[in-house]
Length: 181
Ligand code: HEM
Image (spheres, rainbow, N blue to C red):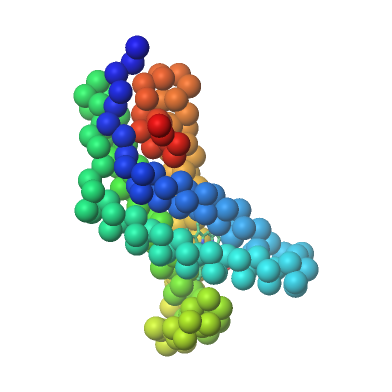
């Protein structure tokens, strides 16, 4: 029988999977909505989804960072080689940087471009930025580069999780699995 590893607490697991699912939706929707040849209504619907779901992602990421600060994650098993612990720390750190960068650069791109974010507007939260094409364009480039970096890191992260679950069978994925007894 395998030893039971320390696992993440329920809020950390739920925050992880809700952010993961939303980010996995945001990447293809973002990519799709900027393609040429879409009808106006479809493009508008995708933009509406993307901008407003992005606000929810930002709130969940803020909650996640706060929770992690108050509740440090369980240590990795001692059996894991040092190089794997280092790669894991770097990948997770960069994933956090990118899930902060994406909503922030998206927000700046939209607000500095002078466009609405319907959810914030409905709550009476006006823009925090002046209109500036230069700022909007820089944010757009950052958002684009961040999206590719995020897609690569997510692929690495999922690959590593599957490797642990299916090949090494060492219980690492179970530490973060939402359903526990
Ligand atoms: C985790 C959060 C987010 C992810 C993963 C994400 C992902 C993406 C991706 C993949 C693209 C396509 C980039 C390209 O190929 O040009 C994109 C474009 C875009 N995103 Fe996001 N996004 C996020 C959050 C946001 C937020 C919060 C907003 C605004 C409130 C936003 C607004 C936009 C806009 C306006 C574009 C089109 C940029 C342009 O071509 O002008 N995004 N996003």
